Length: 171
Image (cartoon, rainbow, N blue to C red; front, side, top):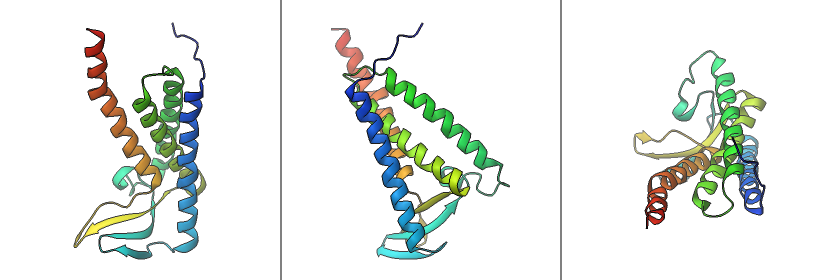
């Protein structure tokens, strides 16, 4: 039913990129823990602060007010998604799907980075805060940024590049 996956150098590059995202994410969070107390803000630009926040919810603090059960749910979902992404990455052809591979690697690294926080602390450490006057974007971290960029690349591959590949195969 499924062909046996062949690990290539490109697959190892994707997995190495994922590990790099995890390393940078965890390093920046350690620096934030060492430098800031909870809710402390350091202004960097008129629209950007470093801040230490603990997010027990998901994206945009979804379910952060729940009684704690959500941590296990989000950890489990991230684990299942991560296993699926590793499988998807390994099954990718070694050529021709660079954008998809990059996107998957970024999502994988971000998911693992946030799972590490949930397992260690019971929450995710967020520290990047953009705002303008009274408006502010929810605080986020390197893992969240990697996930966002990765999803954009996956969608670009699926909606734009897949059309191009389909059009080329019909000629």
